[in-house]
Image 1 (cartoon, one colour):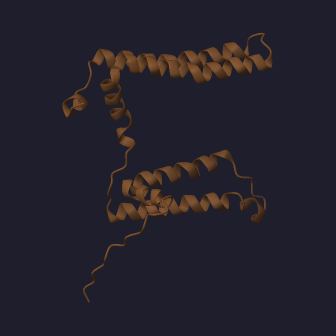
Image 2: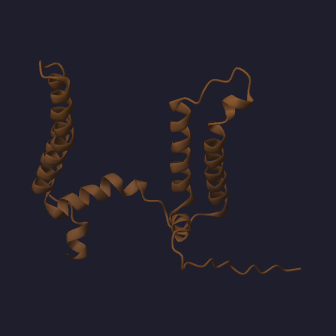
Image 3: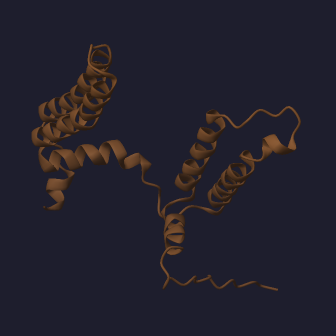
Length: 172
């Protein structure tokens, strides 16, 4: 595929039809599940049929959308929708410090969350809201820190990876 094929958007009609089929796959799936659970089927049959519908329905919508969009159209749409989630490779020093504070705070809050109830009087048990907030903080910190930080995290899992520290030249 050439660079022109990657950059050229597909016809708008195909994009609208592909997105419409994708959304329709989810809408139909989410509207059929309540009908199944209200049916006179046994509980196990309801669970089985609902599970099949939930796992198969959206996939059929995705496959149909890909067929309508074609590979270039699907890649174009994917770049447009998910392009903003890709963090920049390099970030400035202020942004890096803010991201590190967010990352470390998320880790510390996650570690302390479970034990807060044991050490504080009348403390309520950790709720799902605090767990979600900590997870969102962690993901946001990785986006703030940029792609180079993700490479540092990935290097933790590669035995042969070595840390290279930049040489710091200080004028005295």
